[in-house]
Length: 490
View (cartoon, helix red, strand yellow):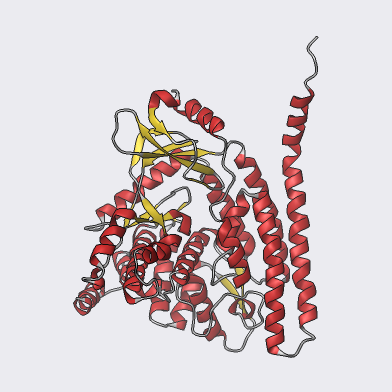
């Protein structure tokens, strides 16, 4: 008769109850943060002095930021992605941003022994047989996977090995379903926006991220599109090692670069003023390259990288040195090469949404409120007006949602404020598939705010949107307009 293994029984019990324990922790913490804000709203309403109100709000945001940070840090997984979305200068209170920005790429690393086991099981050979070197410490660890620098036997160039964290899928799906329930409650009480549809699209997109073979196909498809449609691609896309891809392991070329968040420090280290004209020119060119790539992907192809958070953007080190040497001579021509990493989250827009969004881009770029309202209807965005000046507020909402440049007078999104467009124009229905565009634009806006540049992607994308609509037979005379635009820019 075999002996009873209490430790094994305990581990199995813990594994089965982990989702329930995780759900309990989320709801207790989320309820505490939400109740804190509701109680504060009552308390601050009795204070008439505006400056005192502002000071009270700042303190409340600081208290909430600590609790949100603790929840995201302790639970990890999907909540690290939540921190990436929420911790943006234009979206969240400054106190939240200061606290959450440190969480973006700090997921707990899987121990090397486990990583080795996953790699060997997936690729069918031992690590020592395949690799000449394999760094035990990861370059970085995110919510779904971590990456290691390595070199294959017989090669002279380094590669990146992306390895999925074991057991992470079930926990992340639990997190998303809890967030969906919370979103349903919030859209019925405080935020008049179709949050549930957004969380459904998040569930679909994150589900795709667990298949690295799908990610590899997406990376190759985007690389081919960008390199084919440009004399020089606006962004670098890593080359894939096609024979070394499975659902849980992915190998690609190593790109030596500096995280975009460290660009200011890198410029300062080279003796250049990070707030000066030279640095500003470099930052503008970086942002221009990124947004050009996204304009082409979204409006011309419809198939695009949907996760441009700072951790996925590198500035190439070799070109940083070139920038240092040449910047004093001809700063107007500074061009730092940008690399776009991690193709786990991609979106393939159907043509009706791609062209509907192209029409909305034109309306925003041309300051056309009527065109924006018509585009909303074409896209299937259903709204309910709660104000007299519906057209003005509708256009302001379109700018706030779908352009990187905030409307005049708006410095930060405040969905709880009575003056916000989301309060005045309730969004009753929002197409799930459009969420990836919305999220991408907001992440690009976060980058522009972080770089200190008030930049309109709609204005840059205008000729791309015109081309897309012209090729689809939706507008006439595009070719003549393009010639005029090119002659004006040259």
